[in-house]
Picture (cartoon, helix red, strand yellow):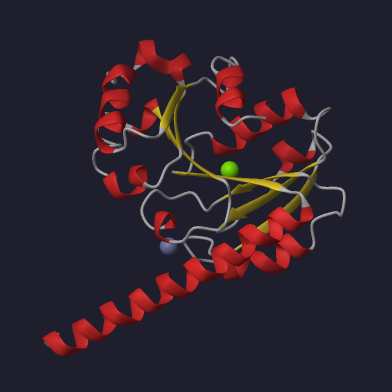
Length: 215
Ligand code: MG
Ligand code: ZN
């Protein structure tokens, strides 16, 4: 590829990212005006995003009118639906991340009484970081099963995290992956992010996560 066409691609991409940021700000205002607290979860497929959201919902559902927007390339949100909260399933049909424009029509369909909305991004640690949705928190989830290099190989994603969750602590004894090292990796990339160790299976760390999210 010639250099000038490469530069053109880079500049189109910059425009897309800029446009998304403006729309994310609009979403942020929209949430604020409707009195909705919005929290995004991102992380690999199988890291436990849905299970963590479900555990949080179990503990705070008497306090809030909750809705969940669940982005997947393909899938269904049965895990969350059984908790009796409103769910909107977005099957992106191949698109590897949600963006601010894409979610807006779904956000506008949230039940009027909603005052807490979890948005689960498409399972992927690579590109969602570039497309903020306008949520007050971006919670980045890794599982111990993701391996010991998962954080240091995705520094740009951990830089935008407001909260980093290291999940699946219940599997620690079977895995050669020290959660303390993952915490150190995260702290060195993004000292501002809160880091919470959890097991969505046993419930360990869920109270702390709720506290960190100020729910
Ligand atoms: Mg999920
Ligand atoms: Zn993507």
